[in-house]
Image (cartoon, rainbow, N blue to C red):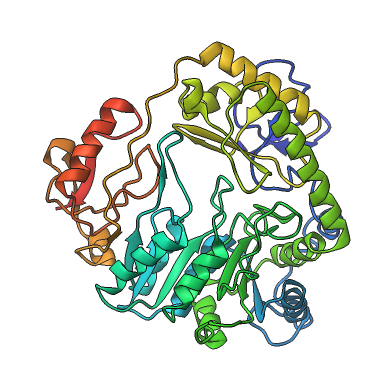
Length: 484
């Protein structure tokens, strides 16, 4: 087997390490990636205890005493009710297909086939897949852009007001989706954004995959529920002590100015369509244990200690002259590699060889996830590694990034499903203008959809793409799949 390799001749096994690094093999890697439990260091204690039991003892079906996420009785139903009360939600459903599956179910629970939904350009691809599955019409809106890092920034309520006016001019909307916080830990005025949408009598789904710890400590952004969101999806491996694929869908409890609440029956119907009929008891236990621990005294102490270490680390890096992106989540550390004259993808490869594993490389930025129990010796090893990176690869700052010429709002000319399923051909960049995209196109920079299937490629975007090929060789293909 390639994934499992023998540790020694006594029959002990370990997961294969993905790639070599320099230096002594006995020194563990500096793992600054997801899941946030840090290879077990910050697993919720009840979950860690469960995993120490005989392997397979927790691999159980929906026995009567256990039930499942859509069953009215049993331990799972009781745990979901307790979690809803703990988080201040009206209802709560555990998921075993990650935040991706719950985002799709939430979207299908809000909109019917043929209806329009408003989505940010920095959407997770699962939302686009949800539109495909539900035959929904995605309307994508542009976001503010940071030329120094090549990253999209959170919108302001004023920006969103202009977006809503432009989108509604094209017809009614069934729902609006927001992403907060972003992958890099950026968050804007979420309460103001939700209120702006509610004034239009529209429901809000917040992709809070990276923000399960929101509002639990001073200095963190408030939770999406506290900001009045109607539906919220959290990934419990990204900011809580849960296992990968454990997630939660929350129905907000309402408030002043909120439109009619989403119908729980519609949500459960969508969950039935998309979730497995044999949910993993281990992942359901992960959802319960991670939420209960994170929101309890032990989890809050753990989070407070992790935040203190994160602030100390940021102080050391800034004192050393290393440029960091100002983020609202201290547990996401984003190095602005473009300021150092380094492509973030090249920085990631260089660090990986030396046992420093980042989470998200981008051309102008490299994001590290510190987790709920950052690695031992982090404050010493990471500054040393990043200073060595600057000495070896650094140079003059890279030119500012140019945002793609995207309209404020855009809707595919050809239905998403029709374009995605249509026969496609590879068109050279010189022959793109006027063609219809057959696949999502997410070039670097900035790594979000320049095109989604069904969008017609205008002259401005075709010219921008040709320009980027010269700036980022080997990172942008010289052809684009278009509808044949």
